[in-house]
Image (cartoon, rainbow, N blue to C red; front, side, top):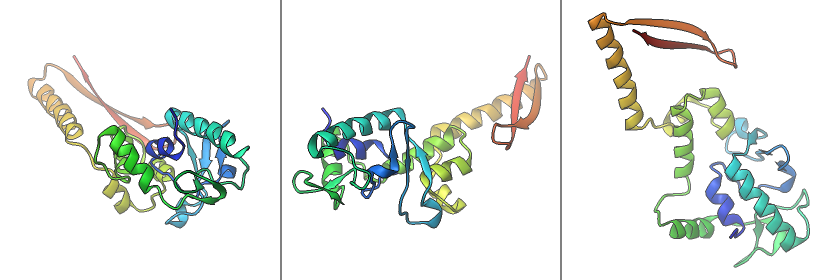
Length: 196
């Protein structure tokens, strides 16, 4: 059962307590970031994942039932204690909601840990730095490196590929070829292939 901000806050790595319905487009599955810690973070458009879209759609139904409509000037996460009562003011904190999510799930993660995991998974999936920055709002390479911790298993996989290539070269039983091209964003990419 959906319980307002709790479900949404658990699914969005870039959650903002000051998010207003005017910046949410459920039809296009996008939201626009308002104020941000960095100038580059403000005004960027972020696509919603399937899970986030589902949660926010459920939240919009809950909100409409509770307040009558999702007016553009209303805050998605309205003020109130213990239950939301004033959609013209933003919730003061996600701390209680996050504590309840952690207790329900039986985990001890910090709220911001989801952001670290999200960036790491994007980096491990080969997503370009520029796409990661525009999605999560980072500007500097240093900050991107801070968040995108490469997991040990990803490092082992990379080493195993290099070892296999080296073994193939030593045995000369196979040919290793390299090709270069561009991805859909115009960035140069290279691929290695082991051919027997």
